[in-house]
Image (cartoon, rainbow, N blue to C red; front, top):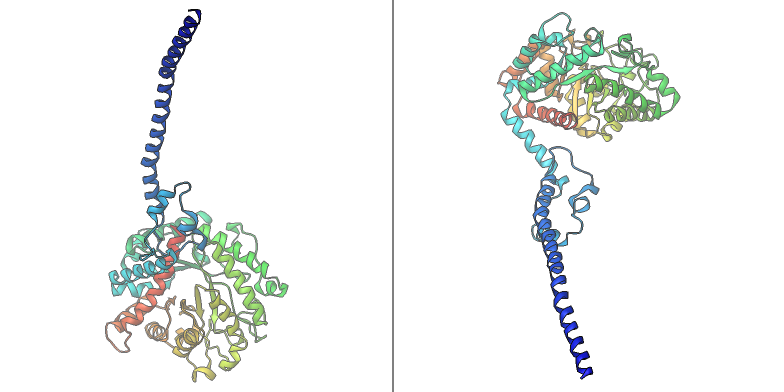
Length: 462
């Protein structure tokens, strides 16, 4: 009997523990499962927008493709989300194009769209870089106001070039350049080339101006004599830095002329020296420095002013060298510039009768620009003339005649014609059918290159 009582008590105790134990543990289990379900649902709700954002980020920009290491597969794959990753993977028979493949196509498409929308007058205007005085008709321009705004809207030139007389103080220059860019954007939805001759040494519109408090930069002949290309690179960085800060985006530098004629006084101190390989290295180093500060550089004065006798600023200057002679010397730095992707090559007004057959300046010669520079040397960047108001041109040719000849020869941009309106109207009439004629295809070829360079500027600036 006693044993039965003990067994009955133990049985009751077990039933009691079993009943009350289940009541305490079951709510905990339900709560845990509920939390797990909540986390899973939250993950599902947040994963979808995250994936959508990644897809948006993969849309290519118009003109600059990411590095190969930044492809979506390499850097944008979601972590710890294999299910989502599988659903986002495209089918094998429909591969997603690489961004680097799409970007050039998109840029080319945008350029063609611009071309279709532009009028003939706008296209021709883009092929001129002139002084602010030539644009507005004023004597000396140190500000950009209503007169500049109206002139740009009427004739949206490709760019403006500034001399010492236009440059007073840093704040004045910055305000002036901001204004002209605003007017150009409003007029034609494109930036201006804001240009300057800032070589260092004897040709420096800003560096020699005490109002700008800039560290002095000596002659390039001294830099070349040092044999130190890093010094040339640092000069490019220095000039590019203050030019960019002020609002300039094009520098007509470096001088890539080889001083093969020691009696040449035009580029004697502006050239890096008489060794073509040294000049090539130094010029490329300056170009690199400028570009790292988002300033487009210019190799000048093609096909080489260092061999000439005479000064094209004053009148006729020539060299009797043959093309083979130039290839062994003067053309070496320019070929290096082409390999480096130089933005502009400035063609000089020098005459090369042994190559051309007469005294035609290089800047008006189809043989020099189209056959040699573009055809034989493979240059597809912007060809700009030296200033067309220099004596070698203005003493022999009218502004209109020189403009037509230079464009027919292959120039993309005409710099500072002696009479801008005459040159502009002459080109316009030539395209519209008067003799000598210029084809619309020829105009479009140049404007495409201009648009490509300006889109690159927009990518960096905006």
